[in-house]
Amino acid sequence: MAEENTAKSERVQCFGRKKTAVAVALVRTGTGQARINGCPLHTVKPDLLRLKVYEPLLLLGKERCGKVDIRLRVKGGGFTSQVYALRQAVAKGIVAYYQKYIDEASKKEIKDILMAYDR
Image (cartoon, rainbow, N blue to C red):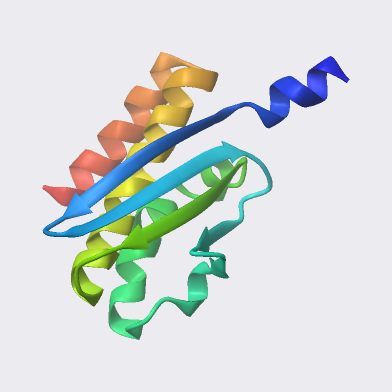
C-alpha cells in the first residue's frame, strides 16, 4: 500500500507561456498517455500545428516518454500561441520529472536533445 502511494505521488507540474497563452503540464508516472484539456493529443487543431506539440515526445522516443503520463491544460491566446505554450510545457515537464525522480544524468541528456533540436 505504501508503494502505491509513492508511485502515485511521483508527479511534477510545469508551465509554458507564449504571449498570453498559458499551458500547465502535470507529468506523472504512467503508461505514456498525453491529454490536452481531457482530450487525446491527436485531436489538437489546427492539424498543421499538431506536430509542434508532438515534437518533444518524438525527439525523446517511446523509451523515455512511455513511462510518464502527461495531462495538459491550456488557456488564453490564439491557436498558434497555445500550441507553442503546450510544446514548452511538455518539454519542461519531462525534464523536471527526470531531474526529480530519475537522475541528473538522464535529465541532462534529455535537456541536451531538446536544446540541440531548437538551435
